[in-house]
Amino acid sequence: MLLLTTNLTFEENIKNIAKIIGKAEKVRKAKDQLIKAIMEFKEYWETYGKRDYAVDKAKKARKVFDLEKATLKQLELWLRHPERYDIKQIDYPGQKRKRKKN
Image 1 (cartoon, rainbow, N blue to C red):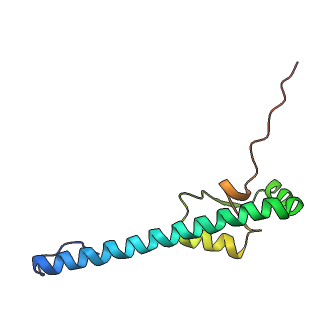
Image 2 (image 1 turned 60 degrees about the vertical axis):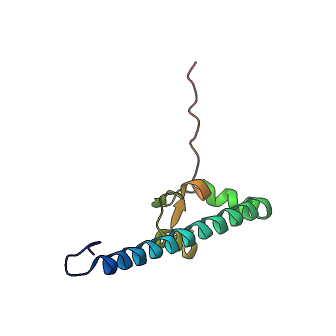
């Protein structure tokens, strides 16, 4: 979609840009709220489901998303199928330490 077009007046172009910016702001707010809910769920899960959390975190899924860079669709996929997907800051296995050879 073009932001500006010569077929429209200046005011009409400004209105179209305002609509696009408004939609982008709504998406950003929705993503922020979803990330907040996911973090709250993680805290609850770590506290009250220690064994389940540890088991899930130890397994690496085929698809891994970055919490800050993930799209709303990717976050929704993780919520629906946490066994198929991982989010790096939530349930992704950490780096294993390499043993030093003596």
